[in-house]
Length: 152
Length: 152
DNA sequence: GAAGATTGATCGATCAATCTTC
DNA sequence: GAAGATTGATCGATCAATCTTC
Image 1 (cartoon, rainbow over the protein chains, first blue to last red):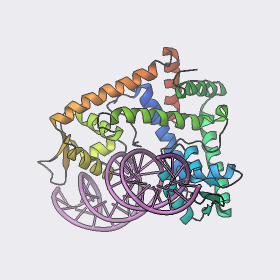
Image 2: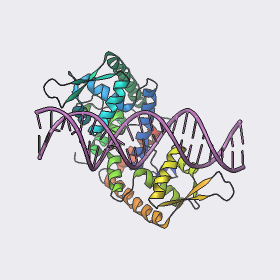
Image 3: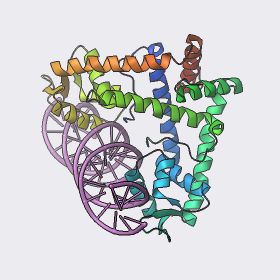
Image 4: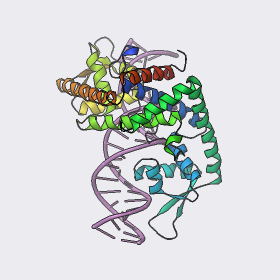
């Protein structure tokens, strides 16, 4: 995907289609989140992987991580390379299947992951302050229906 | 930014925060749009640039294109490289200032751009069919307020 | 042969550094 | 010196091809 604000030919502010509005708002919120994470040396992709690892009881398979992030396996290979060189994650071998590599959080990784959760909560809070509870609920309901392709 | 669905540790479907919902829905809609464009050999970034060029009366400066796409100049340099090798765009020199390069649509570029507009309209239509007019209007209103940071 | 992971290519995005022209 | 564009590095994402192990 391209990350740039996607407004092909909609100069007037009120003229944007709902689709373009959703993409633009998401892009804006995502940039804010990425900027807040970057101040801690993190990125969205890294924070997401760390969070998945923190939740699991045991080190996850790289394939499991790819599944959970809805991305392709080779993506996780590279992400783990970067997280390993950051000292936040360690690859460990699976005792039962030598094809499998698991990702284990280091203690530093566990610490940073808690910071990432705080950052995420801050961003959620900032958004919540813009909306009334009723608006937030109805927004969530509509978005969930869009996510389900209208089958709800 | 990372493009993967961003749900760090929200297993239960109803538990997702509004922020995560917006990012997830946008990611899903964006993937659909990219897939539809890819069938015509395009991408979101290419379609966006072509559309900006089609709207302008005269060839745009690469800086102007960057401005319009809210991205960095070097990004446009590379995008134009790809569009030029696709035969959709041609770089032309500015007669008055030799620092400036402008991007001009080729006739092929103009043709493909119209297809891209149709694809975009299809995606907008698919989304519109999920929502009632009243829902679409209230969704747009709330999203616009989020985009303005609550200052509306 | 299939599953798990990696490698190499490409795309889109950013940033810092550079080059030409003003 | 500043503006416009490009180059080279890095990150995150995808895909096709490969390697090891099952």
